[in-house]
Image 1 (cartoon, rainbow, N blue to C red):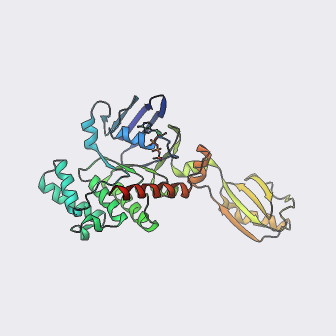
Image 2: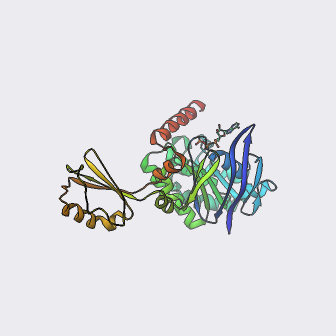
Image 3: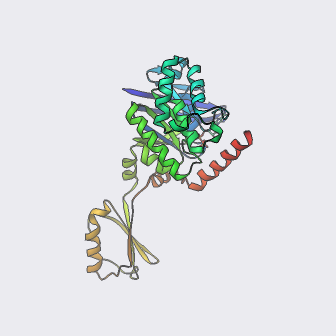
Length: 327
Ligand SMILES: Nc1ncnc2c1ncn2[C@@H]1O[C@H](COP(=O)(O)OP(=O)(O)OP(=O)(O)O)[C@@H](O)[C@H]1O
C-alpha cells in the first residue's frame, strides 16, 4: 500500500514557484530521503504534506487522507520532528511525553504503556525522570522522535534529524531510525544535507532542485547511473601511452601530472587484469586507488552543485546560534 502519494504538487509564493509540480509515491515502511541544495523546496514540500501550508495546486494523500480535504485525517497519520526544538526544558522526558499524549487525547493506560516502550526504543528509559535541560543534543533529538511516535503515526517526517550532532550521535540516531522503520513499519520521509546519512538510511532518494524532482531512485542505482568507478594509478610514466588499455570494459583513460585516471565499471572485478596490463606495458606503479561514485557525485551531477560539509556546517552553526539566542 502507498503511504504517501503526491501528484503535481505546486507552491507559489507570489510570482515565485518554490515547489514546481512534484509527483511521487512512497510505499509503506520505506525510508525516503529528500535531498537538495538550500532553498530547493524541501521544507515547503514537507510543510504541505504535513498540512502546515496550503498547496497552490496539485494533490497529495497521506495514508489515504487527502491533504486538501482531510487535514484531521492527515494529522492523525503523521508525526513531525522539525528542525526547531519544541521540548519543554523544565520538564522531564516522561512529562514531555505525557503532555504530548494528553494533547492527542491518548487514554491514560495506553499513554503510560507507549511512553515506556518508546523511551526504551530510543534508549532513554533510564533517564526518563531527568529534566530535559540536562540532556545532550542527541538525547533531545531521540526524545523528540519518541514523542513524534506517541500517537502511532503511519508516516514520520524528519527534517534534518541529525543536524548539528556529532558523528557518533548521528550513528546512534541512524540505528534508531532504522529500527523503528523495521520494527514498527513506519514510513519515514527525511530531509538531510548529509549524503552519507541518505546513503546509509534511505531506500530511495529524491533529489530536488529549484522546486522540481530531478532524480529519484535507490542510492545504488543513482550512483550507477551517474558514472562508473575511477582507478587512479600514480606513476612516473604517466606521459607514456599504454597500448594494452583497449579492453571493452575500459571507458576512458586520462593522464595528468603524475597519474593515470582510468574510468570503468566494476573496478574490483577488473583490478588484477588492469595491473597485469600496466606491468606488461612496462608502466611503473607507485600507488593505486579506487574511487566509487558517492551520492555527493550524484548530487553534483544533477544539481551542478556540491553539498559540502562546510555548507551544512555553516547552517548548523547559524541554526544553533539562533536557538541559543531564543532560549
Ligand atoms: N513564506 C515564504 N514566502 C516567500 N518565499 C518563501 C517562503 N517560504 C519559502 N520560500 C522560498 O521558497 C524556496 C524554497 O524554500 P524551502 O525552505 O522549502 O527550501 P529548502 O529546500 O527546505 O531549503 P533549506 O535546505 O535551506 O532549508 C526558497 O527560495 C525560499 O526562500
